[in-house]
Length: 422
Image (cartoon, rainbow, N blue to C red; front, side, top):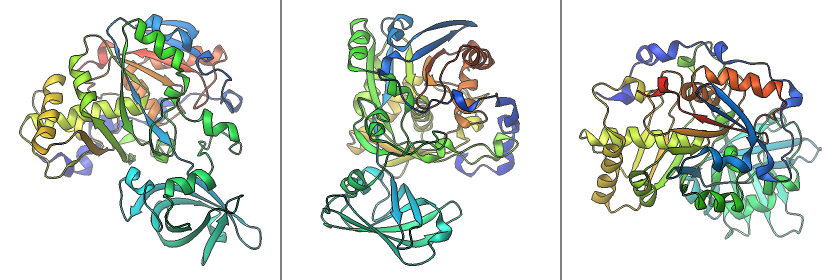
């Protein structure tokens, strides 16, 4: 069965009929955190486990995790993806770089490219930019950047960038000229502090246009306490796209098109997943989506599928259409390693558009560290799938006790409910 070619009708069966209005809650604007706390681990932490709610602070996270647990964190690094141009007449045009198109589509490779480069972008105030090029020069006069509109798509624009000195990488250009891509619900302009605060302390591989916000709470001291308790850490890379903020505008989730994001999983991660003896804790929805995607890709391989390319992928609805018995997680992970061995690969690279919604058959994660998410969002659907109806109790509790919400807000620790074990 070719799961990638499922019909639209099949995709809308079962889970696809879920009305998004069932995943709504009142979020007053003043509850959205506009700024981070001075100390990352001083944020509040709501722990939900089997109907019981505990209020604590994030720095006490280790108290609620068992010895032998393994935490998986997303080490992607946010790029300064917002470029602010001004036309001769003063009109402000903002170009938001989302995905590379030419000469390469791999985001990490694209950021290392010298001039020129083409990207898929969103453009603010696009009606004021119909023809010609836009230019900007760095404050020190060292870098000059030109943007030319090359085409339009259903979702955005194709923009050609060229710059001087042409030998600089596009990452260097963005770091000098770009602004932090704060999410749209933080209703202020990016400031200098955001370059540091909207970035995890362990960020490594550039490529995200949104932070894996659950990781923003971690400090080096926290990692020391976790390791002293016997809680391990391992890292995966998923480059977060702006689609993570895309609301579900359709009445049912089966009509929502999930965004596609690039991930990288090293051989060491797979071995850590195979060797750990306690709970598997996903730090953030991005880590969870990547871990679950690895399972399904490995599951396909375990029953004989041999992807022809070195880049693997998982589509939005594949897990919901699986037929037959599901392999154990270790079997799926070993299949991934065997496939990598056959090609001499140290890293597994791929793309996923996996949508996790109520009814999803979890295979990897036992606990989830995450922030509070927007109403009627795919991120809230993921939390509801993992925590069951308990998400409503947790969110109601947080609202009545003045928790801070969304990217710069407080955090939750959810343990997987038995109903989510498939």
